[in-house]
Image (cartoon, rainbow, N blue to C red; front, side, top):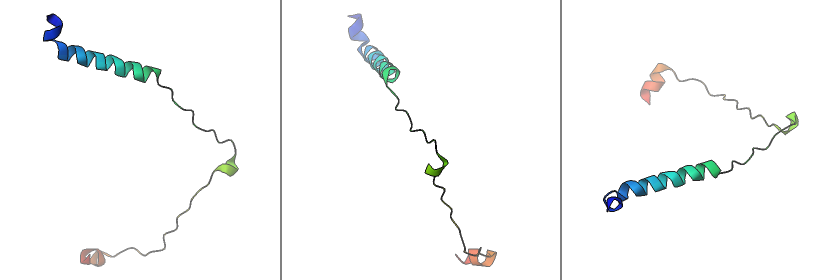
Length: 60
């Protein structure tokens, strides 16, 4: 009878224990290790536009 009164709390406790066990036993994949500087690609962006004046900004 006591479990019937508190079935919601029991269900939440079971879900919490299952979630904690799932997180504790989950494996994390290892990230690939880059050992060569040649494998790194650096992207460069060049912006050649002029800055807007205050009057041009107000017109927008």
